[in-house]
Image 1 (cartoon, rainbow, N blue to C red):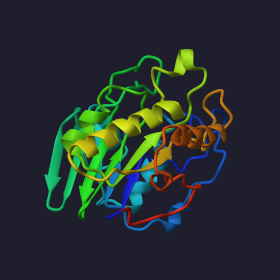
Image 2 (image 1 turned 45 degrees about the vertical axis):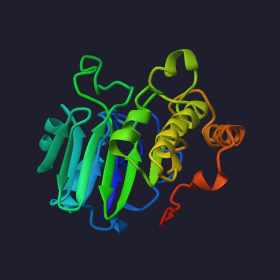
Image 3 (image 1 turned 30 degrees about the vertical axis):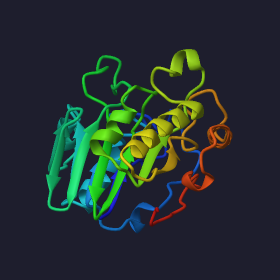
Length: 252
């Protein structure tokens, strides 16, 4: 099963092609090299997560793909041509055969225009298939529900947690975690696993290094994360700090 999360193959995170944040690195995989896509997860409708040209290309190439979106985003996807679209509120879930998808809380906001702010929902996702489970936290600040996510929908093999776009903190702390908060969120997930007698998940840090959206240097988030991880005494083998385009499999 092949799953995409917030796919963006566009060159800018913007409603127009001639201005706005430009990609700092190419997509991890050329679009034409994609395998058949079974499921696309969308966390919210911001331009650096929901890219209209990418969505249209995916719809054209993979018309049978399933789409999971937070409440209110499904209408946008259907207008873009997607057919098998499911919308979810927080804590709603759906199971079909060997696949289950659960929509979980995040702390963020939404809106593609100044007059459309917070008219659609934002979220994270838990996907379970083939005996594996992945938690994709979406775009989020720290919030008090990480432990509940693990207790309700764990255990996880891998947790994808955002670490970038956090400066200045007086402004960004309400919508994006910094690396220290990402470690705190991971520890809350891990504590819930310990309480249920399950091994801790691996962490893949996401949401850094592709677009420069805020004041910190693009390469600062992973450096700060590694330091915070060491300071917390967490096992180094559980931190999967991947290069753009790197692949890894079979977490243990």
